[in-house]
Image 1: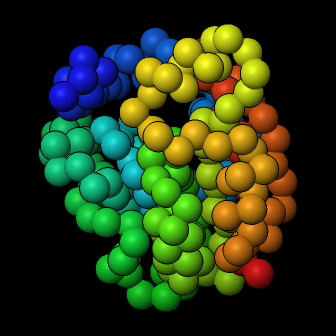
Image 2: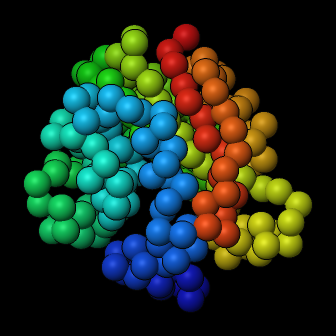
Length: 195
């Protein structure tokens, strides 16, 4: 196990590192406020929620889901008024059209194209017809700092924004997309609606 993997295996350290590298999540928080103004009254799935850091930005009908049981246990302890589930996003155990909003932050760059397509198909299935998905992903650019972050990141599939666009367009309309700098990390925001 690499040094970075050892650090991120500890939920509290992961929280600290992400806050440090991403300027205390200011960019993500602003995107959430701008793109999901009615989020408090909506049924939300935070897919790949990790340690639950964004759960306070959503209302009582929030469900955080992550494949890491360790992260879920940490989130349950830290945000005891929220619902957190461990599970695989390739097969979501929710009925069709169940959520108004699906939020995915920094997950897809850990997954190969086939897995991303399976997950986006499931997101489409559980999102209501008038719902909205908000996806933020690490992107490649040509700066030295971006290349260094990509080398240190555990995600092996950091794509240029067009790579994500191609995958997401299989199941969604891309209502808006734009780059954003979050601390020292470069992200692309995708606002999605159902086809």
